[in-house]
Image (tube, rainbow, N blue to C red; front, side, top):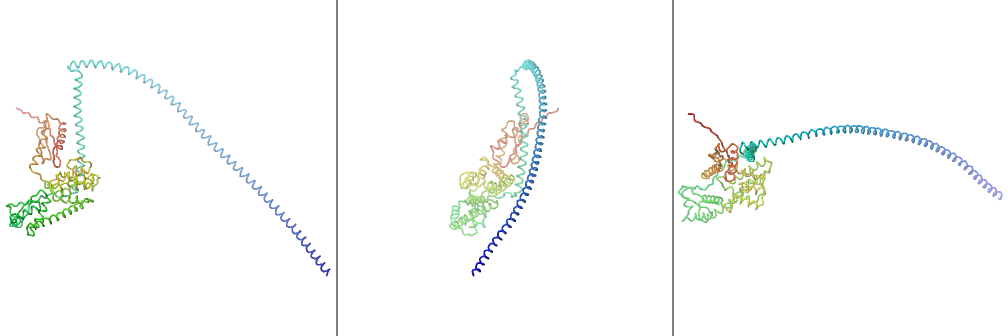
Length: 518
């Protein structure tokens, strides 16, 4: 047992020793391989380092060569620039030298010219002195011959020159006025003709209707009533006078207010149609007629505004516009006249590039005061301006109302167009009628203005007062004074007379020489 145990121990120790030896041998063999690998890695690193060093040296040499080339190139460019600058400086120096030489030569020339001028000035001074002496001698001789001092001769000469200049100025003014008139008349005719052609309104033929036709003669008695109570009730209710005369089947309504007269006409038509004529029925018919007329007036005003394309108008102004339908001026219906003026003014404004709507509004409302002048004090212009200001109408509209008869200065072109359209509408043939007495008086006033001018022989108002021909004495009035006289007469007519349309003034100077052969 002991031997076996000993043998086992020895065997174990032997195996342990062998294992240790084996491990030592294996470690030595691994260290040799690692050393070889390390040496191999070091050799590779050295080779790579040498390659990189050679590459870096090559790149550095290349870069240095490139830098050297660039530096040489820049130096070459700088040398060229310096050479160019030097050449320019040399050329400039040459030019300066040439200019200096030219200036020197010119200075010499100027000095020579100055010397010549000084010589000439001295000669001229001597000649001027000699001329003054001769002029003094000649002036003394002229004064002796003319028996007139120099101051008087100078004054007479100035008067002659002044008269000549006056003639030349008048001739120039006449020429310029003729050119301006021709141009302005051509433009105005084109605009007015275009407006009139586009607005084809029939001539006004309506007149105030103050007579009522009765179905029979017996109706007169029924209208008068027992002891005149019906006619008194009718007149009290309407404010209109009933005139019943011997004219068969006709009675006349008389009243200064056209609205009252229209109410009376409508009420009387209702009574004649109904046949019942008594005080109670008369009051009912008048009240009904008044309400119907108010509705008609309002509707007429609205239709007028709609036809003209005018909006935003106060109800009171609409009502007054409708009232113009029953207002006449010289036989011309006021509403038709206002519509015509609105259309004409709108068309002319459109041709001139102005506001057509504003021109139509101003044209329609220019006579708005005529719808109130039977009820309120003041002219239709004052009443129209007051109404327009009350309802805050446009300032141009207010100025057009105030200036369309020349009472106020026109402050806008539309106001001038409204005044022109008003004249066109009123002065066209058939628009109005004029009493014979007023017509004759207007002709006499025209001729009287011409006769008062100095040098006028005779004057004739022709063409219904639209032209004034003036004959002057040729020995007292020359050609240029005829132009001045025509202008003076025109100004006096504009300032002193009121007339429709235009008045043409023609001054005629005719020289006739007559001799008798015996």
